[in-house]
Length: 210
Image (spheres, rainbow, N blue to C red):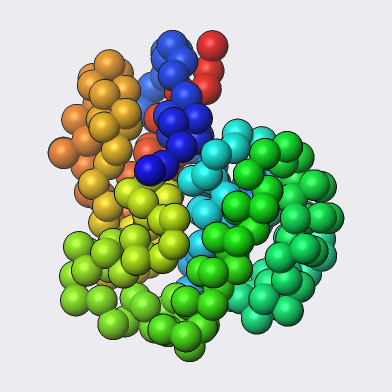
């Protein structure tokens, strides 16, 4: 099961916001300097790694710091992560990111998923994409990775909506609920656009506002 304390499950009272403001929201990938528009495997894997962190048992702040630790130590490909090994991921990577729990478990998950990616898709998320027969098949392939559920899959795919043909995850219930509070009809919007992804990201961030 996905963590109830993940970035998508922390309850908070929403604050007022306009659709215009939501459309200007920075994507999580953009904040990390990941350019999904490039469409290459390198950027896709960076976002996959970040999604594994954001979808876990930690806060958004720690997830971001941990990704930065991977970046700082130049561990941004499945091969390099496997070469680094479990002990190095636990310390210094997870330690620098601020983990105080689950560091060994998360390290093992990341290593296992790097192995699966290499063994099943030759290390290429684009290969995973190209072998998918539709949106549901794409999501099922992602959820076949160890510890990846609907939340992590949603995190990964929602910012790929404009770039991957079958990337079209159903907006999470919390996103739809907040949209209704602000009189935003998400079904009237084009889900396969960067604007829609920004709206989703903005609504998710609102859950953290006090």
